[in-house]
Image (cartoon, rainbow, N blue to C red; front, side):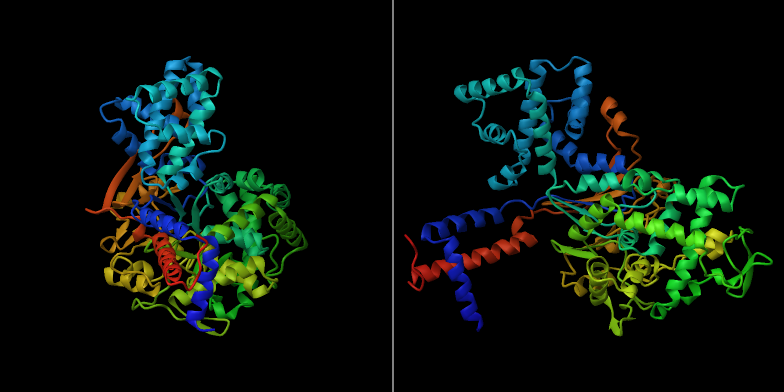
Length: 631
């Protein structure tokens, strides 16, 4: 069948949906109108690292988008304190209403004024959406009332003013005002941001990545680009024992047992009991950390040996330890070890696990692979996630595209294939999915660990020195060489080279990634290559705040351009509610356009334009009598 025949068959099927000339005309009018609407707002966040409260607040305030709209709508009508109070109510409606109730401020007049203000704000924010999208965004329960109040005639008219007043009075008198207000604030937050992009790393040092995932699973429109910490947990869910041991070690190191036990019902008690028997003089958490680290390094060495194509044999160090002098030779130089007690290691067979170690990793394997909550979250990461995403002309990924010293795509060999650039990233994405959904293969399962820490991994992009950091104090040994991507990504031509590889416009597109905390206090700039690349990891995790000097970056893209938002430290939700404290943020306008970008300029606009073209072709078939309309 040739193209013309396929096209005719498709249009004939389309005629079943639009069987009359009038239905075609109506849809053409509607779609062309949609193309003229302003481009919806996109919100980019990265490197959340389990910091639930900070994430919760920034998601609620939409990186300042709501405050900006409140300032615009109520300029001259509300004081600064009143606007702060109003914004807090939008961010945390249930908690704020409860606080106001305790203060006995929720009078009928207060309710009425509050609801009218929320309606004014929602109406202002709804102008860039078509009616059907607004209807989808309105929470169930009060849909018809909110829709009617939003579309009502101006209050200057006597009849609609009385009608509206009666509706509000009834709402308040029957005790539905709180629920109605919560529904309105939900609508406002949904209208504020049309699409949320999480550019990697839900997990790490913060205590509640599980709560963050629970929250984003309810988001109306989201995509995820996996980070190296995400892949580590995904690898653990696939049953990779080295990934499991590494997660345990990290959680113990940062005193973050809560995510294991409370978040995913993974008990650490067997490990603590085992470690206490080995290191009775040590504090329990330190003892457990030592015990799991030895298990991890043994398993890691065995894995590296069975995967020679990784070319990382130099990372096998546990068998290089001099157990008489408690030293290790690395790069021709001998270093003293920080540990001198190895009760589970046989110097003659250092990679062999003891019976106790085998039992520990076996139990942990079952806990990770059988955790219902972890399975639910990992399923979501696979469903909404990918290694990279091309969206509205921008390229989103967490880490890097591996390149060589000359800035050319690094040629890598996996499974007998030479891969580089986009082809390599596509290969990695397929292997990650195969590890979870396909039949078990040892090499594919092993690959999940390599992606966590391999020098040529697009998630890691550096050679991790975990062993050296655990067993030595020489900081020269701790240095982790990075991929040359991080040398070149401040050069416009290099960024254009990357964008072209992904079939994106090198002049208009941007690279948006995270992974590397930007040390603002040392003068580092998150805006690279004159704005062609934007790094939005500014240290969301509290552990990084001293290192970076800030509490993270987020990015907002709307019809007028791009804005990078630099966040300062956020205390807690309770303080935000009681004192109307918003997170301190500084907006850095990156690209401010003199014109307004419309839906026609987006990926969705291209799809709509294709629909319009098809409808025009269908209309011609009707006009020429090739297909017979029903009217």
